[in-house]
View 1 (spheres, rainbow, N blue to C red):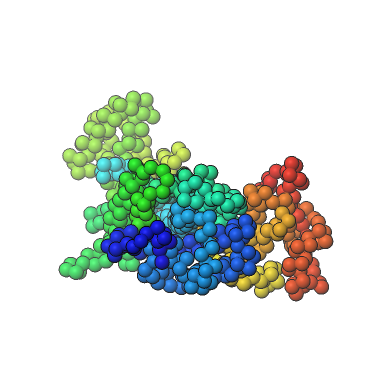
View 2 (cartoon, one colour; view 1 turned 90 degrees about the vertical axis):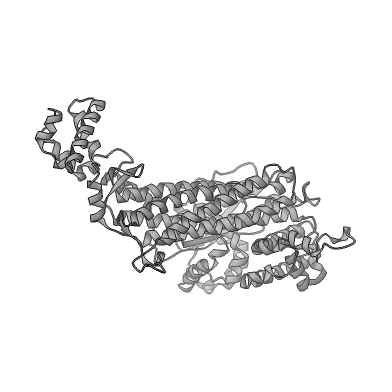
Length: 621
């Protein structure tokens, strides 16, 4: 059933329908469309368009539909609906009848798709950030493993100066950190909710758009309805981030393809990322790296196409915008797959240290050190540069390295040379001399590795549906040992916006939730850290994250019931009486097995004394 058929006396012909319909690709927004619809149902209840019973019936049906979509997403793509919004509404009508038709009150497909798409992009950005963190971790591990291995550095694909192989690894860590930073910035800018903007002029119902946005995990609501439905900057930014990152992955691939070649022979790639030849049995081809390099063009193409689509569009929504999805639906999974494949390549690399060292010693890579030696003896650099050039020519003519030349040969070019020239020419000395910040000395590279490892330890973020399994395991563990109340997995799905998680190298390692009562009171619950994790500070960072969230939500007071009051005192919580927590007592304490023998302490953090007197939300380290 089309959502717009009343104006037309006949339907579209089949050719136009195939040309117009977007379900074959926007079915990927099914989960986001349902989650957005749950939030919109809540907003309609608040303005009395839906009764409490109607709201509950719709939400229950939407969550049932969500489970069906997760179980078989491809079934959505072949349902024959015009787009994902039509599909969800039709499926909802099958479950609750005409009640489903009330859900679209005050909402347009324009603000609906803009919201769905932002939710999808935000979720995808989280997956990418996790993958980048894992790839960085693999580079750092390789740098640590090969610390001391010497590699020839190149300019113009000619041997230039020796560097540590670890220094090469950390160069790509720097690139990945910029990729990460750009993506985090893009995610922050996209995290505003257009729902409630209507078709272009805003909704006619008194929807609290800020509350609606925050309920969906957005920072806030978009501020202009025209821009809200037509903005696709976030798509351009994501594709820009992807394109720049793919440049880095492609450059890495080119380096490793060369290092893996028979001519260089510096590394050997693992069997799981290479293939053989159908004709030549000796071949071991770097297919994974060549595919990363090749797929870079696909991502560039999506970026270019998106800019061309937007460049001349008037406000507000135009059907051209339907072209915003296929490119990014291809580019983002491509980017993610390339990051994962790069990680597999780095993980399995075998470095041939003797071969890299021999190459670093060849090609007169210590010539710059020789020039610096002359400068230290008082020779102007330009003159020293010329002297060394003459010596290099002499070495080449005799088929020798610079260190193989005799002192008499050195003196034949300049009397400045003495026996102390030979230690300067040693390869270890060349490496050790690069002590300035960012140099290739062991000390500088070791410092860079330590700094990178410290950065990658703890990431704190709001949870998403992909985290449910990890959260459930943590909650179940601490409930089993009696430290937390048990929670059903379905409850975690419904309340995922309450949760925050910590990640260590891309893996969820801790969780906590912020449950909000009806009176401006909130409670930190389900705080738990993986008992196998050796990284400290996760609990503190989770509490800080939730207190900052409570501050943004304009809550008055955050409470905890805890057996570790010392921990919460360090977070500036103060003691209070359980009698001041009627909501908590009524909701959970009656169900607690330790009710009659309770050893928990009540504590509170005051965010607002009144509407005009606030306590700044500052956290201790």
